[in-house]
Image (cartoon, rainbow, N blue to C red; front, side, top):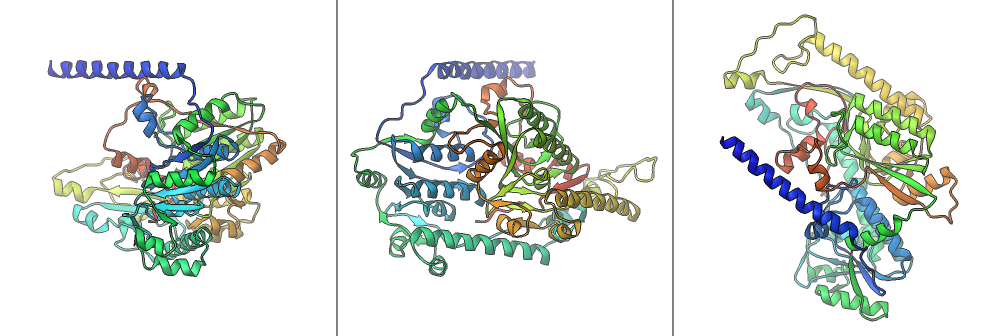
Length: 573
């Protein structure tokens, strides 16, 4: 009876919430787009995670004001503001931003382009870290509060190893991999980084640090050597940042905005925030045009997944993603396609299914790939159609390799007093059992499959990049490359972001430069109301756990499997 009452109450509350959201959604549909006044200043108040694919939205005023913006949203905002006569200036106000260096480079490049067009760009920093300050260097003037801290002190990479903990628990993780750099399992099988891992991470830090120093030097009119020397003295109190030439003025927010208004020489400016301006821009774009291009976004780990609706937070599920690609391919109104990839890879066979559909789409529409923070392993594999591949200098890509992983929990079961008995028919029936270690024969069997899968991966890359197998294989070995390194090694075609990807697809589709291209994002944004009404809306557990499982497919820890997955998650701070 108690369970029935709890279920009844929960159902009533859920229905009530859905009804409230539905009412607001209906009201919102009848609203006019926000008005952008003459002599406005666009406030880019960025904070939190920047997604490639739009997260679920809640059609309630408070939540809409806090809704995170996607990379393509920001690109569209800045590009529109560049030619919008109503926008007299743009002020970047970043909070603590959670994004990889590729996304940051996209935003930085967009702001730099805007500043070069002659439109004033300023930045007002609030307790900035290196990420926020990097973005601010694209602005003409940088402001801070008089009593604040600039946390600029260099970069670091950290790896965590679980071998000691697993030994205490009686858990053994067994990994077979192809490629000496495909060191995914090291976090479970080692207590410290291998020489190969150290080599890769040092090369990544060197490239990113050089880019950071060059960007700060260009923005602050210093030499890279001067910037490196300054960073060695960080972090900085506001007055120290001013004395070292890292910021221009120490003002409070209202004072900084007043100074920006004075420099435009048009009098007081009306503030318009990014989300309101985006709604106004979207209303104008809704009118469409003859030149519509799809921006297909693939974000998260690649899995086979259940054949259900394309979840907004479920990574790249092969059946749903393939359905999206086919929908775009069949649409006669779509003239070209940019596929935006932000994925560490995942299931080997799911990656291959998506790769095949990408090739089919390439035969129907002009196609260009734009790589975001990471397009590694399976995320790189699905872009190997022979079409142009554009990456940022800070994109993590490559990782051309394969591994098989399984967990042996027998030691843990013994500690817990759990005993299993296995009855088998077939020589390798227990090859993926969590109660038996791999025998030498089973290990040879898996090694054979891993090596074959690896050769197929390298061969597809070689064909797509129009090179010989022998030329590509030394660049494979599971090694993660930054975009700059991948470009030097011929693994990507160009360095750039959405601007360059759109220009390339324009050329392939033979759309005149004078004609406007309207990007249509797939999959479209979904609201919480739509999710509540969906049968596939089951999502439980704390956010940190769901984020972990989104990146590391659960098959890694249970049934084992062949995986084209980036060996580690890199967060350079």
